[in-house]
Image (cartoon, rainbow, N blue to C red; front, top):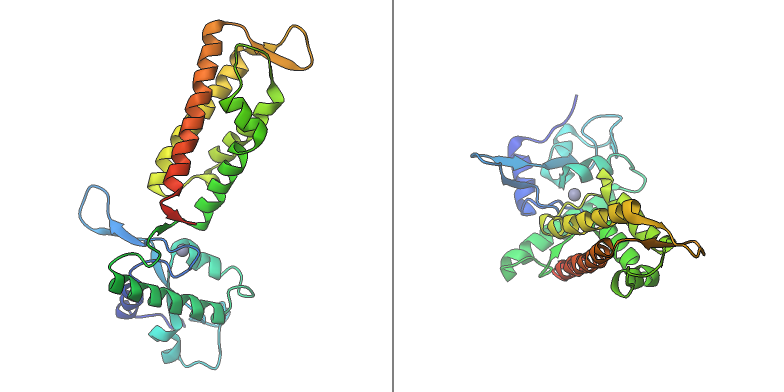
Length: 250
Ligand SMILES: [Zn+2]
């Protein structure tokens, strides 16, 4: 027997936080227009703070069924966060969840009063923040920066200096490291594409230099020019990522 919320209670929970996920680290919008047709897509859930049935997370046997299905026992979360709070009840205690709920409702209230988002800026999801951090750390690393901004591929180069850049590409190509925010995704996709082209150039056209030392060289002048151009493009793409980042609270 589950003490579920009524449809009215679920809607009320969602509205009280402006349909944003109540996890302060997330704040994802949970409702929007469905693609190409009428209707809406809802990725939000009215989650139970104390579980709806025995064996569930944070279940409290002293509560009555009415208390369990009451609005005071609910919190509006996006699907990911709803699943997350049920994985670890040691960390996501009911006290933490009450606090999230209170903060989210207060922010939604302030947003109405101020006529804008309470932070003034969009917030990035935790996952997007993690991805951007990885991009910045790699690109701002001195050897990588040197290879992209200063090095001239008409001469020899150390292949090893390019590894962090190509490791970043592998990182960004993993599904779990896909950027979610559409604006940030657009600029990140260009960065990925440019690094990808550059890696192909190095793999196909780069060979060991005649005089050793583990250095590499690209033979044809036209390919050397192409590598220089791609390095400029990569840096420009990174600057665009950095520019978009200025619009966010993170
Ligand atoms: Zn969430």
